[in-house]
Length: 77
Image 1: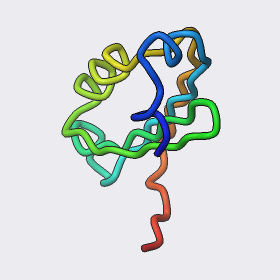
Image 2 (image 1 turned 30 degrees about the horizontal axis):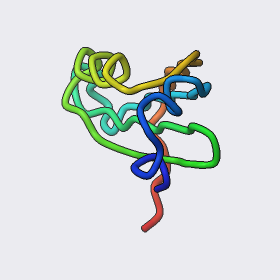
Image 3 (image 1 turned 180 degrees about the vertical axis):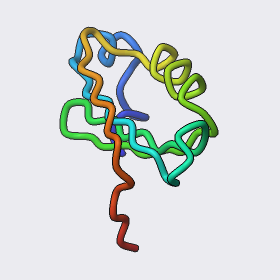
């Protein structure tokens, strides 16, 4: 991921797209968050939707779009 090579000021000027999706049928915990910013994509897991939004607010971005999915994503390793 190249975001680590960019300064916070550069990231704060870019648009970011955040996508949240549950990892289980229980929507009270376990979400995956996908961040797309510039040409970079980052994934991380959180234990609740509240933690997801806290993480989003801590991430540097200029403007953002947030997508909340209500279906468990297919993850291929």
